[in-house]
Amino acid sequence: MGFVIEGIEKAFQLILTLDKEIFIIVLLSLKVSLTAIFLSSLLGVYLGFLMAVKNFWGKNFIIATTNTLLALPTVVVGLIIYSLISRKGPLGVFGLLFTPSAMIIGQFILATPIIIALTHSAIQGIDKRVRSTTLTLGATESQSAWMVIKEARYAVLAAIITGFGRVIAEVGAAMMLGGNIKGSTRTMTTAIALETSKGEFGFGIALGIILLTIAFSINILLHYFQSKKVGN
Amino acid sequence: MNEPILKIKNVKKIYNGRTILDIESLNFQKRKIYAIVGPNGSGKTTLLNILNLLERPNKGQIFLNGQEISNKSNVDILGIRRRMTLVNQDPFLFHSTVYDNIAYGLKIRAISSTEQLIRVKNALEMVGLSNFEKRRVDQLSGGEAQRVVIARALVIEPEILFLDEPTANIDQKYIDIVERIIKRVQKEIKTTVIFTTHDLSQAYRLADKVISLLDGKIIKQVQDNLLWGEIVEEDSSKWFNIGENIKFAVVTEKVGPAHISIDPRDIILSYEQFQSSARNSFLGKIIKIIEQNHLVKLEIDISIPLVVIITRESFFKMNFTLGSEVYLTFKASAVRLF
Image (cartoon, rainbow over all chains, first blue to last red; front, top):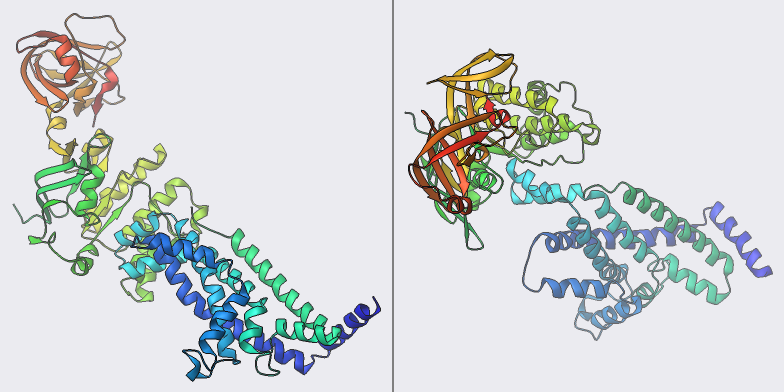
């Protein structure tokens, strides 16, 4: 057990001295995941909204697909994107493999179904009178849609935060698509995997503590938004 | 007569093969108050939704200021929709402040925030809720919420204001307030007000014209038993005196000239006078029989004509014919005063 205690001591030392390497890794993780979540939210909230308010051909198929994708293993996403963007793949010419962009694509694909599914149920839970009220007050279709999303704001934010929680903590896609290159694509999770296998417990534990703190804060935030949920 | 602000012609609305609205012609004049009365399912709300362009009729035309609007595309309709507004029977307030709710119609019309401030303040003053701007809507009572909803509609300064059962879901003490607001709106903003109600006396109290709907059609039913006379006090109870030696027992505090109406469904017909708690009973003669779908409308002469509506079943069971002598019985509380 000695090496664990030693590791924890080292970890606090690294965190308290604001170790530069750790700092770079955390920053990169946040940059990649926040970018991915931003893009996922644009598409996911839009699609989730459409699925809740409109009837269109193939809607049930899309709902079933989205729900299946919720449980998508991260390594499978890694595998699929890898085969698309590797030098030999159809998108190989863009040279995306082992770049932060590749990781963003992977995380985008992981987070979007979550945001779609949760937005869908959030919007469905909103009182139907919101739409009719905005229309009687003279709103256009898009003004009306915006009000519906605003009424569902806490639940939609919860959807986005849940998506962020999934991607910040995933390791499979980040490892396969980013390649764990120091200073360029090394995120908290890939670094923990690597440092642990190297026996550098202190470094791994330090990142683990930071990751846990982020996850904990996310959940506090999530809980806050869920308790404020309006509508119905 | 002036060009009506709103006019409908041969409008039909069909749901699942059932005609729920069938109106040949209906005109609404500028700056007047109209009440649409009728039982549940008579098509009142559908009529309001069609007039407000929320629903499209299956057939027929709608004209606003003489210009047909029922043939316009959804894009063209926006400008027209923005000249009127509807307050739902079970209204919804956005989860925010009173100010945000009332300012919504102005925001989406891109009206400057300084003007928004002034207009919201005026609208709140109009409904008697000055300084309520910062309140959150979940802190409002039912009556306050209803008035915020009306203020939210008024702030737009609509040419036509539709109110679907504006006093159906609120306490008695707020009904007076809402009625006063409706009168004030018509006078001060010069809006045409069209509202639906269950309460016939409210309709006559507020409206310049009352429109009665039954099974989606306009009927004259309400005007039929509409009588003018005087309330007098005799033997320490109140009577409505119409002349012709006819007096109805009524329940009221006031005396003097008044209008009354008796719902034709509230009158019981029998061949013999019977003992009951109802205080009004008159012998009359059937002078007219009109069949209306599953109902039969009878006109009965008790020296003045009264209209009675009974079901087709009871009509045949009782074997009524023209000239039959029958007793009409109805409670004093069935006589509505206004």
